[in-house]
Image (cartoon, protein in one colour):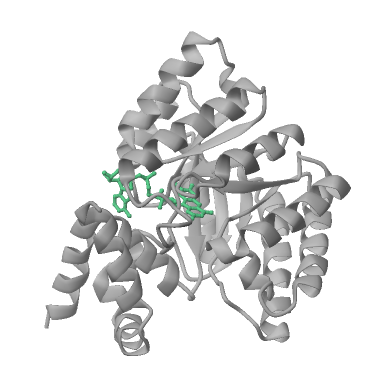
Length: 309
Ligand code: FDA
């Protein structure tokens, strides 16, 4: 196993410990949370989205939150997401929404989570917008794809999409099924701590499968969101789409807020569609620790912030 993957697994395990979590949360601003989290509130994130839009970047807004079991909190999250759709329309922003199902009580109560998603997707239809269901850890993959399928049948691919993770061995089969539904799919490498019997431990294999999945979906004529900051993979996608005459309106690059900013702007200049995943809200801890886990060097600025007097 390479150092990077080992660091990711160990760091995510340590970050999940309550004592570590409460210390990190206390020092949020000092440890550089703002680098990855655009704002605390919906009102504050609107100008940030507008700035990105002015630079030619589309946005997918993520109201941070996951692993929620309290139904009142899950209802509050879905109300907030519906408000976000209204705000996007009101301010004429070039933005759609990304959602984690566990923010809507998926783990404890999948049926009510589906109902909340139905309300959200109905609002997306009303505002002629789109919501994408993020993919969480592998214990939820089957149920997420099932829920996605039932929403897709009701609302259509122009209003709902999902995500496939290249590190999972199962992903080529899932991708074929989603291709059969002509679904709008975001392909990512995968950000969770997964065992070796479920996911490739080596980056090399993940990268290879990432590219195979992208090609499979593009070659089938389906809309593809290529979500990575990996310049080699991005170059390969550019070469592949140009070689096979795949229209730039059939795919977009997606990157995370605060990562690969220069590359995002460069791609826009070259005439590619680029969308920035822009998280906001106060429940930043799990999202933030996944970003640190992806890149050992990021731990440096966190520790420097913690040690600063
Ligand atoms: P890789 O990790 O190989 O990084 C390539 C280069 O990008 C690095 O060398 C570095 O320069 C830069 N980089 C990457 N991560 C960085 C970081 N944290 N800080 C600084 N630089 C960094 N995952 C998931 O499981 N479910 C999901 O729904 C999503 N959704 C999602 C949406 C979007 C728009 C993106 C871009 C990513 C996700 N992910 C995700 C996360 C994804 O699985 C993966 O963990 C990250 O994208 C990092 O992998 P890269 O593809 O960038 O490659």
